[in-house]
Amino acid sequence: MKVLLINGSPRKQGNTFTALSEVAKTLEKNGIEAEIVQMGMKPVRSCIACGQCRVKGGNKCVFDDDVCNRISEKMATADALVVGSPVYYGQPNGAVLSLMQRMFFSAGAYFVQKPAAAVAVCRRGGASAAYQTMNMPFEMMNMPVVTSQYWNIAYGREEGQAAQDVEGMQTMRTLAENMAWLLKKIHADGQSDLPTHEPWTPMNFIR
Picture 1 (cartoon, one colour):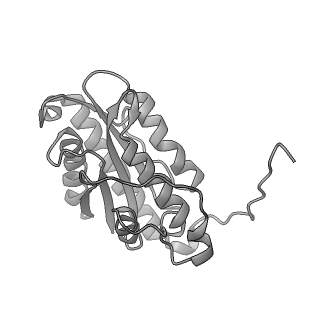
Picture 2: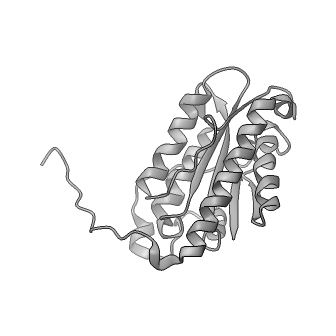
Picture 3: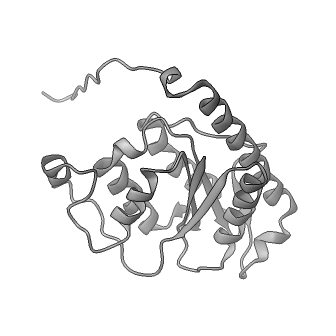
């Protein structure tokens, strides 16, 4: 079993990385592989709703000049997802949102029904709003949202300061324990035990 953790901060060793590392260490203690992927500092395109990913198929975005397709491909062999982001103006990093929207639209088959969690890191405020924003796409993808003892939030300003947030780090460990438990349950029951869904019936309110 493997969990992919996306570090949505441009700071490679910043507080988002600190929080995700606490999750990863606890997962590994439970015998689950954890890979932290750094988004980096290069631009990430936004989805332009061209629909070409649906036309051409292949579970990839037609724009292949950033990290989107490379991270999507990693989800093909991962069993769960954690997305971490710093808080900018009460919202997740814009690059994180662009990545999530493009991945789920172009490569949704890699994500459906896989457990997921969001982690928000901030200096002082706005974390709960950013956390809620990141969780919303998981629900649209039928991804079980893994909870903790509190919202998955950690506090810190200077690099590595989040490690001093005792409750925040405990929240990260509890999140990892819950995710490990859920993954083991899913794998024990087998893929055939996953729920089946009736065909999607989309409806526009303006006809």
